[in-house]
Length: 215
Ligand code: DX5
Ligand code: ZN
Image 1 (cartoon, rainbow, N blue to C red):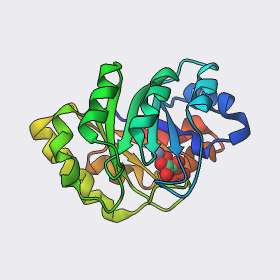
Image 2 (tube, helix red, strand yellow; image 1 turned 90 degrees about the vertical axis):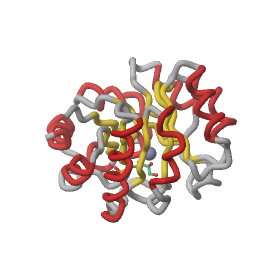
Image 3 (cartoon, rainbow, N blue to C red; image 1 turned 120 degrees about the vertical axis):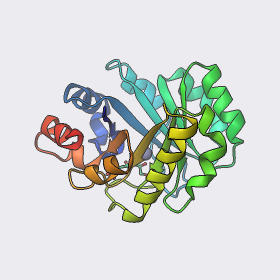
Image 4 (cartoon, rainbow, N blue to C red; image 1 turned 180 degrees about the horizontal axis):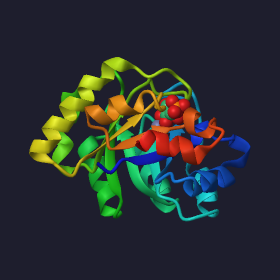
């Protein structure tokens, strides 16, 4: 299986985002995970499209943008312009999911839906056929550095099984508490893309850490 790694900029040295993204890419990270928090959908505020745009000036990155915002529809235009390749929004947000997916696709980008740890798998089933990815949160959204929630594993499996029937190309991304111990569990459950912040940026050798996640 071809596992992809998406390095979460939330775990990077925040005063050095450009060079941290370069370091992640050169260490073998396939994607750059960009966490957008609005202080409303989640309590925390992180960074917005202008910061992603600034990072994009430092290299050619696959920006995997994770919108933890109440109104993702209002953010799409900014992120389409600032280099996102994949835009993922939450099913628990206030925007119409079908419409949001259509706008992302019309711009030529890939579209994903994210679900919080306690949101049931079934909530994404109506959209699977038109989605490129489902992001299963394996911690409560809002902060990096939290512990992996084991109870999310059966949900990953459930989505994989349903996707195999109706959308075999669907990618499943997991986000939160991913390290060398939890990676085998999520891969076994059916994850294709592993987001990792604290573990990767805190590693003494990021290249080795990425290889350990993929192994
Ligand atoms: C949490 C974010 C995650 C987070 C992952 O709300 O969506 O992307 O940065 O960080 P770690 O790997 O530290 O759990
Ligand atoms: Zn994220």
